[in-house]
Length: 444
Ligand SMILES: Cc1ncc(COP(=O)(O)O)c(C=O)c1O
Image (cartoon, rainbow, N blue to C red; front, side):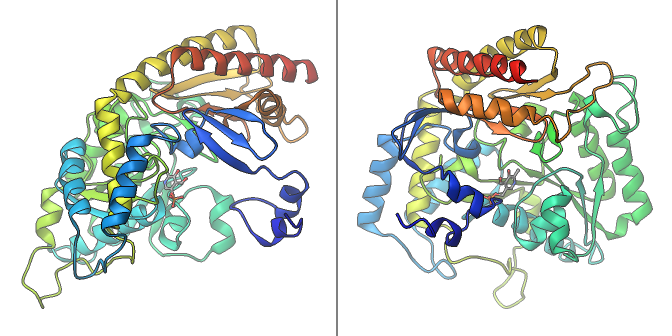
């Protein structure tokens, strides 16, 4: 391959000259493993990026897509539907316990759709002034303009400002580094109370929705909220007629050991945005799911302009929907969610043991098959390492060399392997991680 293609073919969030010096090119996947163009094999400890829940090379999904391709690959989504989309919609809505679905191709489209849907919903239900969206610092909701505006990490947002007006960021429920210096449960969940304070002070008549990553993995690290947080926010949203949008692009489709974070936290959002694990990586597929109240707000007669004025060329694409449907059946019939829950517990026990052994592990957090650790140079003061000691880079390099891919942030590492991982594969993954921690510790 001509070397200069690396600098001319951009990949997201990467400096291409540097990437081109040591390009990572993945050529094949099989179950929980991926292979690069140099013949190296890796455990996919991140499921792609929280995507490949049922593993690589799944025959059922490939066959379903092939069958669909022979029947129909595409139709114009603005004035027609297709059997694959309709069948999938029916089964997906049952699985998610929601009342309506709008199919999309990626997570950013899903969150963007959710926020637009909230705005139009209010216009059509007697609250036309509601347009503001609350979101949290450190969150990530995607890269389209509205999703970028809602995302709370400055590094991906500020280069594009000014963006959509009306987004207000709040502190996330980050107990390990509580910005109010409080401790759970004595804190009374100040971070949830501030949602109400903000709505009141912004004027409830202007606030349309709050969008949340129910469990956040982003620039701010890896954040698991206290149990009551989501229930309190739900109550506040109801009080002020603010729609609750869950961005479940990572947490959906079994990642937390339940179908959705909404099930785990026992809170129904008004709009649930999903993607990633929805198609297991076999096709670009995402969705905004919504409640009956929202569905009804868009009902009307042709010509009265109450329909959703929104859509994409690939909305409800038959091949993507065939993939999503086969993935859903695979998740259900292989009991993949329960397996993921068990494997998550197995990982957690081992991470807690690592914390006993390695003083630079400040905290271990996670739910289901989404587990991680935050690193500090001083446990008492919770002081991060800083740029001169790239602890995460050291661990990541050591793990890659040994054949493990993980999610690595500035101060944290997260593990989110496919839901179908076995206990021996989990043990292999954690043996590699343990050796990598030892190697990194030796370089500190
Ligand atoms: C929580 C969350 N929301 C939205 C998105 C955007 O999804 P996509 O990259 O499919 O547009 C991502 C992507 O990483 C995500 O993690």
